[in-house]
Image (cartoon, rainbow, N blue to C red):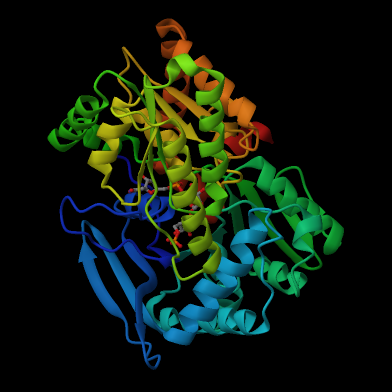
Length: 472
Ligand SMILES: O=P(O)(O)OC[C@H]1O[C@H](O[C@H]2O[C@H](CO)[C@@H](O)[C@H](O)[C@H]2O)[C@H](O)[C@@H](O)[C@@H]1O
Ligand SMILES: O=c1ccn([C@@H]2O[C@H](COP(=O)(O)OP(=O)(O)O)[C@@H](O)[C@H]2O)c(=O)[nH]1
């Protein structure tokens, strides 16, 4: 395997993938899954919150080594979790960055808790960083961390990657102290986004609100400061996922689902229970399909796997209640003694089970209203049987839609488009399914998590990536 000759890599993110006993599933989210894959190749360290709460912050670091990755985690206080994670990260930034200003809450104590936890991260991680280390900070929880580390004297090359969309400037300006937040990003040497669309929104903000100037090569100038900003779409660990798909456990999961489907077509959805994933709209689109095509009733079912997420945030409690109600209503309306249209499962599964379920499903319905990337779409493609692949129905508002252009792209707000796409997928001839799948599989295979990590790290080391050389 060719390794990049780099210094140590220090990865910092809110969540650090907790080692799980073999076979135990869970909704880790795409970031944790992708970073553990990338870090396995590196000498380095993954720093973040343990997920635990304590009465009083101590700054004690817990080191663990698991599956080739060293992690260093700290516990946070109850108030930290409430204001920083549940508050500013998930009640302010998450909805706003997913274009939901109607759900974004602007509460001063959230902002204060966010700054405090970023300072706590900076205080505890600074002694672990050597002068030659590359520092790679992840996601909206930790935007000001780079500036905090600079204030503590760190001169290392430092990069930031945003895993969620960057909103249009006109929406972002609804955030109190938005300039302060965005200016703190200028402490980094490299800023990465999943897609050109999110990058352009960022550049637009910089020019409109900060009076900055963006060069075609990705350099951004604001006052005296220059940083490099570019799109680096994240991928899955293709090789590892294929292995998971060929495991005995995946085969068992495949057979279990096929057996219980009893010859009916399976449409699968796999999402954290999050309002950004468009689950209500998806259920309504599927309902519309059942209404539009009565002959398909009893012939097909939707398996929606939706493990609960961020359950302490009331918008998440609300979406859970709405979906319980809506799935029940649709099932009550259409079910027969031997058929239920929606199997709605609030449980997380491990990768091997998921791989088997994906392969056993003729259609994947991946219809977020807005999504930074969406790795489920890529996993579905990777799990398919090349001789008889399923069809991916994908929201045009997911970052993945910019790469997976041979999916059936839909507007997730439109019941009609979802209904039509399901019908088109069910009727699609095998040759067309194979043609579309081959082209998507090539992208998923080539532009995998290793490619993503290498491109970002190359930029962090100050090297132009191949794509950037071609563009320049
Ligand atoms: O850590 P949680 O609060 O439980 O949430 C899970 C993760 O959700 C978000 O994932 C994003 O990253 C994926 C990988 O880049 C991307 O495909 C997806 O579109 C994003 O939603 C969040 O950004 C992570 O920080 C969370 O860990
Ligand atoms: O029961 C589940 C549901 C999801 N996932 C994983 O969680 C990740 C979700 O990533 P995605 O980018 O689709 O969305 P996110 O949840 O990060 O917003 C994918 O790797 C899924 O395989 C999982 O391991 N078990």
